[in-house]
Length: 380
Image 1 (cartoon, rainbow, N blue to C red):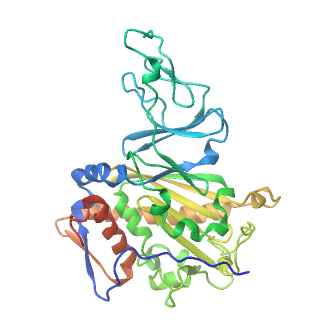
Image 2 (image 1 turned 45 degrees about the vertical axis):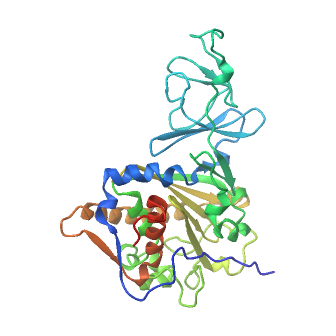
Image 3 (image 1 turned 180 degrees about the horizontal axis):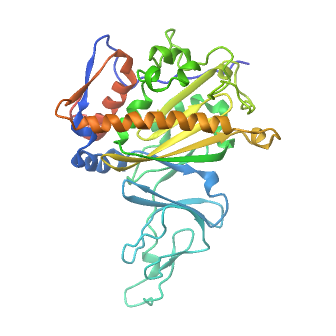
């Protein structure tokens, strides 16, 4: 039976046939703009910080840094995942460095205040209870947490809207891929000397593809023309004849994800979860990319590969060619992103131009300005 796919919706008003001006160059390197971003939508939007499978057992924890704000996700004895600000209530020390680990209790490395996995303060070796001090008054501060298809999202505002509002149609459009059942087999990590927005905009267009990705355009005919939207309105990108996956040869040694449509077996789907998550779906693999802004001109990127458990269990499972090809594509992208970042400071630049083929870049910049400056703020 055919599966109905809800298409990606545009974020902006109807398209134009003419060129439009991009946001000013200083928005890509100004420390003041970076601080405004951190204090505005990065504090209000749901941010993906990883997968539930990273903390499968009670006591497992995951620490992440989101533009200087630490968050600690912990699975407690009941199996529930809790999210807390990664900061001790005593003198503000970080409780855990970034990464994963396991602990029976969360003890501060500074003065040894100790917390249970559910956030309760249970030990203060340097302060006795009484005299106006009660441990029950100083639990770890909780952070709103939601899940989507095995992914964990946090939000630093007090009363955030539901995650489903931020995901929009993409939250349900690809349910047949059963992302929650897929498992991570590999992570690639990169440091890029470019603003996070440069990387998002690069993802949202393919005018650069014929020049930057000669290997990729051999697999997706549309990309040879520098386009990301098919002429007939189809929301995915069709693979070339005989292409099964993104590898140098176009063939795959990995079995397709069960339950996909015939159309899916010949299509690449991709979308952005604003602001800093990319999801890519192919017949045999799903990848997701998280951007971790470290400053106005530096971004850390994590790139994870998800496969179906049945594919992983197969005796002939060998995704090496998938890993190698994707790393090639990402490194090609990040190189030109760094060139764009360096050029943004030039006196000869100032502000870019967005032709019609940059519709999704325009959408992103319009959304960005609305989130950063509010309805009364500057528009494109």
